[in-house]
Length: 108
Image (cartoon, rainbow, N blue to C red; front, side, top):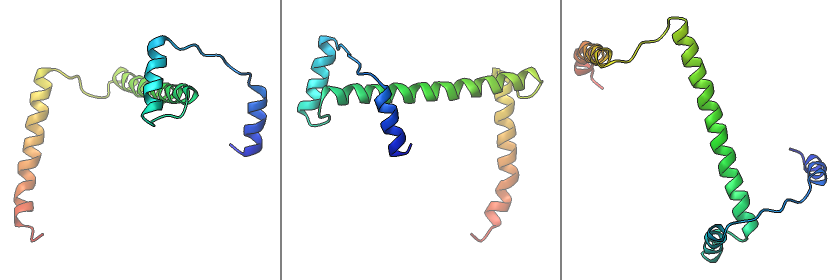
């Protein structure tokens, strides 16, 4: 975001009062005293940044989950059962055994 845009956004935002619990204040104070943070405001900003990142990851996961469910609904994919996992393991072993001779005879 350009500097001018940031200034316009910050003018439109009102100050927000956040009340921390006694435990949260003590936790923030410990971080300030250790030099990890400079102020309680930094603690709130850090918490919000972590929350935002968690929500972004959650949204991305839900999109992936929806894509997977849609694929299954179209008949794509593989149902996971103990038997299907055994079959998959056998397929992987067979592919590995098929590649092994070529890899062993390769000079590199």
